[in-house]
Structure formats: structure tokens, C-alpha cells
Image (cartoon, rainbow, N blue to C red; front, side):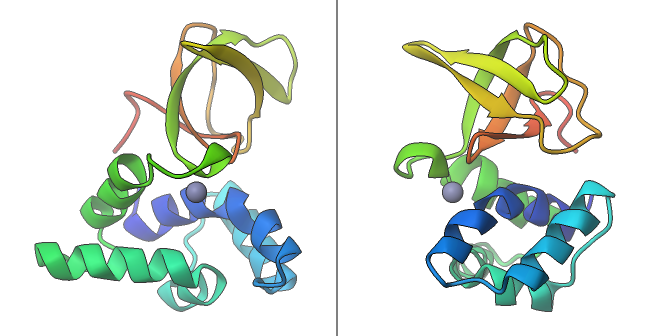
Length: 147
Ligand SMILES: [Zn+2]
């Protein structure tokens, strides 16, 4: 896993919201989604173009820590540890899979509620009982598989 690929994995599910707000070039975003689902990196320039607020956050964290903006360490901390106190589905959460009987949907439960999330990336094998990290109700990765 590279920093740019991990970054695109977390950011891509935000695209439809940003597009609705008129803040995102839909063609560029779809290319990011397709590339990311195939495990291909997106350039730093395209990530910055599609997700400028994320880029600013990454750059601020990189400057504070002396890292490269798209280094794996920087991207991982930004998304896994600093994107957790956002409103609603924007925040990255760790949830447990409690049902997985559909090829597209997995039901997950936090301590207070259950809800449906999307298996967004074909390379994530989900089983009941797994802890997964989600963003915008999409499964980004299994907890324990991070690298
Ligand atoms: Zn978010």
C-alpha cells in the first residue's frame, strides 16, 4: 500500500457529495474511483485537484511532523486518527460486521445502532465479526490488515 493509494481509498467515497455541491469534476473523480478499485495509484496532482480540503489537511499535518504530504505514515494518521470527529457519515469509524449475506451490502453495528455499509473495494474480504474502518458508509479496509 502506498500513501497515494490509501489516500484515494479513503477519499473516493466522498466524491458524490462533493459533486452534488458542485465542488468536484465528476469525470476526474470517476477516474479516481476506477483506478483505486483496481489498486492503481492516483497522482498527487489529481488528488489535490479533486479533494483540495483534504490536501490542505494532509499538508498541514506533514509540515507539523516533518513528513512528506503523501507519505503512507502521513496519510494513515490523517485518515485513521484525525478524520474521526467529523459530523455524520463523514467521520471515519471502526465498526463490526454483524451480517454479511448480500454480495454488496454488509450490516454493521456500533454500540448504539446498526446500519448498512457498502463493500466499496473488491479486494476487501469481509466476514461476520470483522472490524472494518468505514468512511461515508463505505468499507475502506479491515482493521488489522493495515499496511
Ligand atoms: Zn469524511
